[in-house]
Length: 214
Image (tube, rainbow, N blue to C red; front, side):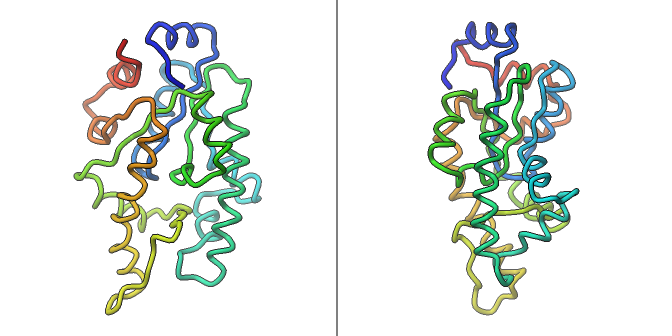
């Protein structure tokens, strides 16, 4: 949703400003959304949490275990089901009546229903956190230390001479690359991960940076 700086401020004052963060898992969406909620009294809405509740899972680890990796039996069907659940959960999040919601979307929001994505763009000010080169290797490490449900959308393949885990590590940067252009298309503003994940950058500076320039 394209806004001027004045419109952004007006909506915030009225409690009708909806901000949605998009980008890869572990790139700082939850971290930044939580900081905004705590400092500027936004209403935090976590799409992952809505999905977990709908599935009856009480943790991200349980959700990740249910979805599994792309080489596990039945993954394709679970991935399809996960996208359907995510589509519904995203719609639930963006149609909330809570005051100034800040929506922490999933990394695979770009694979949800086209009508839902259109509604996201029309009703939310979309902030894309772009994974910079410095953080791509870190993302791979975090993915295996703290696995989250991940939609591969056909970007995983077993590579000859490599184990399944090694193949995932090899394919993961290509998945990041393929998603980057899709995230950018839906964004009203793009912020680099080097800013978002820099502990020396205050939430006031980030809030300033994500607002419209004029």
